[in-house]
Image (cartoon, rainbow, N blue to C red; front, side, top):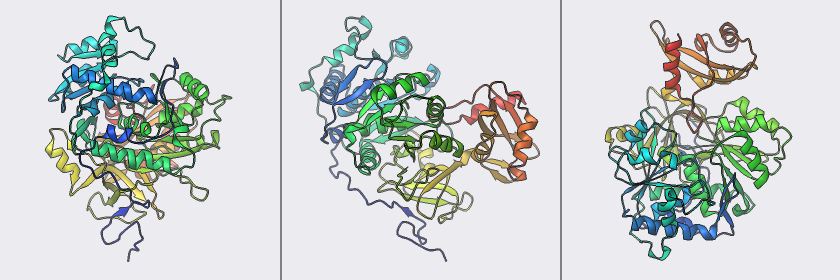
Length: 540
């Protein structure tokens, strides 16, 4: 008979957060911007441009948000219209975002490196009233018939330049004329695009209530676990603000705490190190490629200011964690887990003197519940057993935009089917092993690509690696390894296959090896396996 504990019920199969529940605001007419600015703190600098040093103080922030909100209203932007932010990280990104939300507009943030065919496709059926982008992309957006505003890279811009005249008008608008619409917590605040739990890109509907939950259950709760005041923390913003990870933490939650956010416009290893040293960065949210870069370039640099490095968006392989702990033995390392569909609320790591589970993505956030179900039968599984992770709680999206079928297949009876393979250990810590859709089915056996990648990366001559399944007439699918060799390496396909044959079960063996110059990844560091499959087929 299964044993129950206070955080897992053998009767219902539900895992509950081990943390105390947090009472969320009950006022239905509360918007996330009012909620953020209702919190007092002693923070001074809000956003700092890493390369120029140009900054926005917390005193200036509220006035700038009100001015831009007033200007948007003057431009004819009203409640329910969509404001497109097509920007890399930029100190004006948070101002545009908060200003739009404060007047009831809906923000959609896209990767500026996307092709304009992709952008056009994602904007179909959206009522986009205005777009904010860099001068470089201005004409392309205008050709889509969307009113566009060029945004400068920092505050030291020439306001007399014609290209920035519209943006300057917004900054100089009268903050006292800001409209104050009635906004409900159930109103849509943001539309973020995700590949979802089933592959194709979908618009995720995020409400003001979802974002309020993110501020409380993710960002403010985590800060409450530590003794030092949050407004003393300095964060380095290298992860993209247009991604839910960056948006939830760097653009939304931390503003309520008064922390300083140092903004990197473009990621480079040199700028990362320079920013950490110059601004004495204490907290560094990363994704695996950035974490790997930090380890690689540490050298003799003075990075003693770092207190915590966190990693999210995609699981971190054990070797990378071990390398980090060896390079930064005094820095707290944690992982977290969340999806666009959960508004980044899910789990968060927390280390104590007695418990340090670096390979785990942590404990369930307050107010969150989970199930782990057998992928074939749907039966709920107890701790120690892997299956598909289901989540329920106040961060769960409203649904997918104009896609009732996808919403219905993803959210069932209030439970979000994440598509991630996971298990809880006996202490309630969660471990993510792979994506359900990425599992390779070799002769009926299920093979997790992440398991093979963890073995392969331990081979010294391999710099980077990814594994995916490629169709095979006899086996159904075969595991194919895409390998980036270290410079000067004479590693062969046979070497890789032989190495793996001694490390894994026969059905898990890598059957083919493709050498590549790089592994394609998303802005959040996730391996783009569909691209690998196409590339692999062309090379085989």
